[in-house]
Length: 334
Image 1: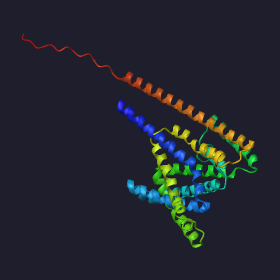
Image 2 (image 1 turned 180 degrees about the vertical axis):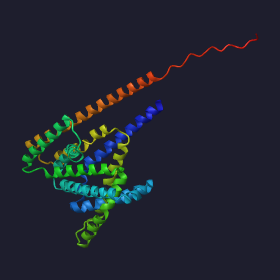
Image 3 (image 1 turned 45 degrees about the vertical axis):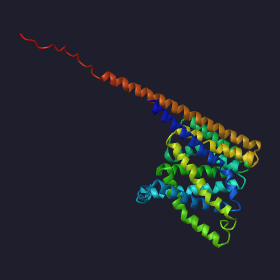
Image 4 (image 1 turned 90 degrees about the horizontal axis):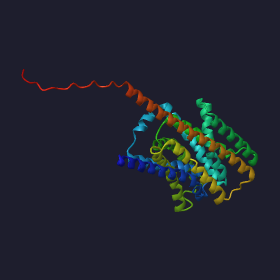
């Protein structure tokens, strides 16, 4: 029993470390994209797609998992969903890279702060899900935050909204596809590969590619964008099978928090009072959402425990009592 408990604790600790690693890397990635200048956002995006497939392909060769590819090809509807996921995440990646390299790290972080609220809204609109009162309050507070920020920016925070809705849609489609992280990334980058490679070849033909003209170090950094894409997903996959979803839900806030801190303290982006007000409303909405999720999980656990206890009591009540055994006497002569 002790060995089993110790192994469970070890697995949970491994899951937490991988979760922190995944969300931490995603949170610190704004430090990486500026290193790829003078490459533009589209060139960086294309290299990210191409090299991500190379990294994932090598990983699949190592684990020798290819059966999923044959099954996917035989399912046109599922393949279509993978294509949609690839298109949506392409928009997300491209806007994010452009935002970071254009001095909009704080606004990009807002997109991932409001992403849980957008996911809830998409669930209501597309999946007809019913919300609890606290979830409605969180979504309403999030809408108010966007309005306050729109006043602060002088226009809607388009970068944040595009990032939030593209990633929310991506999560919705991935839920329908139901593939593991490594296999899903392989399928999506396969869809992205040919258009990305064609763009890079066209860029080279125009003499506008930076891959072969800015030195070996620059080329190596562009190639490493594939590893920057794949490594956090591998860590996330290792965390997802070891820790509860509620824990992952809390860990996900690490990414936008790190991005927000980098935007203010490292990139020195402005934060006037109206933006603080808008972000504060977003954080309030997320606090309500997190409180409601934890409370609901606690209630569900209590109900499950109560149901299990009642089932055990009923089973014990219905078990027939055994009849008393008769005493066996030795046979003696008459």
